[in-house]
Amino acid sequence: MLAACTGPCATFGKIVSADTETLVAILVMALAALAAKGGGFVAMRWLGRHRFVSAWLQNAPGAVLVSAAIVPVVEVRGAFIAGAVAGAIVTRTTRGFTAGLFAGVAAVALARWAGLS
Image (cartoon, rainbow, N blue to C red):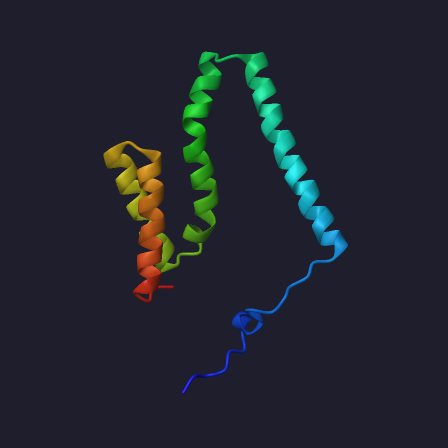
């Protein structure tokens, strides 16, 4: 016998509508993201590829990953600790950001599947 769902899955399959304010907010955020990306291209054309800018761009992806991952790791939850350790080890051994990113995400998914919180 199947139990009735009382959580978020209770609305699955129902038509969801958004009000005008929400749609305008989404549109404004999309425009801001496009403007930021375009501004970055203009700034790079204006600044050129100086040594400082090149070094900063080399290290920016790692800093973004750490800033996104540090909050769950500080909460000291088992799955996030496993993901951080796996990501750090793979990034260090392969010297590749992408491989470490995928390893960290896979480790968190595997740890959650195994029952870690």
